[in-house]
Length: 315
Ligand code: ADP
View 1 (cartoon, rainbow, N blue to C red):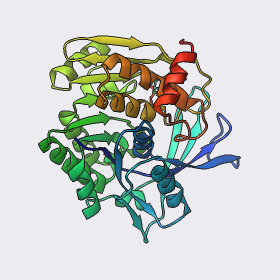
View 2: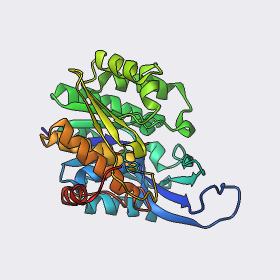
View 3: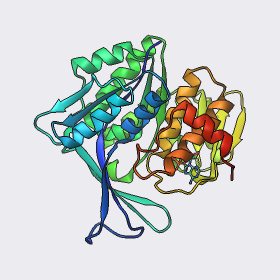
View 4: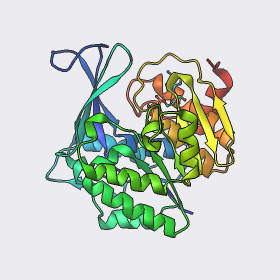
């Protein structure tokens, strides 16, 4: 029907290299790496051979070129990435706590990423799209919210489908508009890809079975729950459930795993695979991603996923 399209922030990511180190002390950092959850997602779709495009905005600077060159090289349609002369490319700084949790310092609102809007190029790309994937992080950008709601309506009218990864970041939940649009996107989604607590937030219920039942009842067709090093589970409308144990890998950098996972699941489903097969590939994409430093460095082709599945033991 047309490419998978997403909307939102393109960023460079700069990471702490010492677990436990805060950002108030001088330390060695690593980066810049191409990043931004929608960018990682769409790069993974394209690497798997899926038609893919993104509505985004970068600055006319090297951080912007680092991202756009990578996306173009990997096969993403970059025609709807605006290049701003007034704003620099956005950024994210990440640090890791000893328990594995992460803290982010985002520079989105006052960067090119904060300027995402409904340009003629965005309308053109959306007009050709067969699927819209919404990243929760993008709902913090007012212009991106407008594009997302327009895309949902347009793609729905063409008979296309919608997926939603809540991807909640406490650092980005700053205004009511984000919450309103969260509920609108949730109401439109065919596929929901929550991670951990996001399932509870989406359902407003603190029990996994009840939360899944309530969301499926509300009209979502498929829920795929990401469980980090515990793997993932699929829940279907006819009460099907498939659990998939994680692959046994050494985690180097968790950032980007959920984005690669979601992209792999969606792309496999759009290629006609069953939920079981898609879940296995997604599990592999997430696991491969965490073995590389940098959020977009561990994206996989279908051939790489097949080899990884064949040779990697499960937990
Ligand atoms: P998010 O990044 O959205 O919080 P997760 O951390 O749950 O998502 O990771 C997404 C998926 O990536 C998991 O469901 C799992 O399949 C895979 N994954 C993540 N971390 C690991 C790990 N340490 N070992 C193996 N697989 C992992």
